[in-house]
Image (cartoon, rainbow, N blue to C red):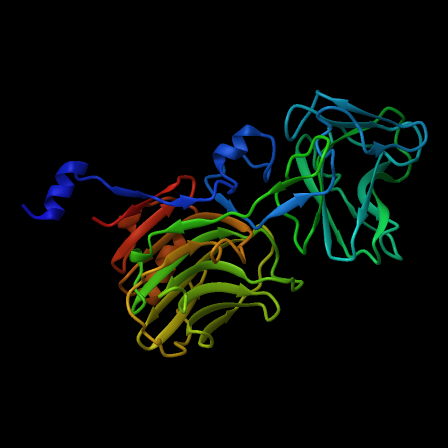
Length: 400
């Protein structure tokens, strides 16, 4: 009996699945359900593949107390269990006079810093607004206002700045505009201070700094072939294309012959280009300009053959084929999704990933983009599909 027929009998004619290798540091529906850290989403059917992050705010969740935080004037700030975005408690800042609602002091070094504070606005904060503000880190103060039009839902307010020196400064939640009625209040949860050029998902802290290690998702390298293959993936971007920030965003990386030869799709932020690199030690790119905002959903398509590589974005026609494919042998090393060997992360959420060893036409690219966020499975794809990953799981459907 042929092996393929025997396997179908064993599997009952259904899909065949192979486990992916995960680092365990990914943001998943399972980790989101715990409610103690992450991106604050629930049942998102995606996997966040992010680089490492350390929360320098030692009391980001107010779970035990308000240690590290102070307040201004006769306002009050307490740990409260009425509302929480993460864990079971948050900080409750109640307005009494037009002073700082909550203040956290931290020593920051002279590198790019991002700050996340999630605010809950339970009622109309009449007469004014709420802002996240930094003081003393730079010559000029800077702030980001909360959206006061949002009611009865958590929102993330993010502020980025570059400290002017290694100094102790202040991260503040302030009232803005006219003074509201005394007794108005705001919940504060998921406070994060981190080094780096982008804000990452929350890392829970309760008395000390805490770190989330880098993510890494690996699939079978044999799903792709160096001579001719394609990769298409659906991604919700975790950051915007501008301004340019350090670090390439890696969509996928196929290392061959000990990574001496590599095929990789990535976003190069300085030039604001998606690129497909096929190289033996360097050189060789197909590129496509792109502009996107944080939260945008993109369908990223990459394919390669003897004539070279091509890129399709959101169902567009495949771009100019360039350069010629060096064509070094079959895959023998690793296939990373969303990073390269656990570095240069895509810092975004992957909804699904598909690959194959055939070819895709312009019409195919347009059809696949119409799939949107839907999990249609391996058989929905043309181009001799070899693998499909619905990113809410840790397994990949592979061809029988």
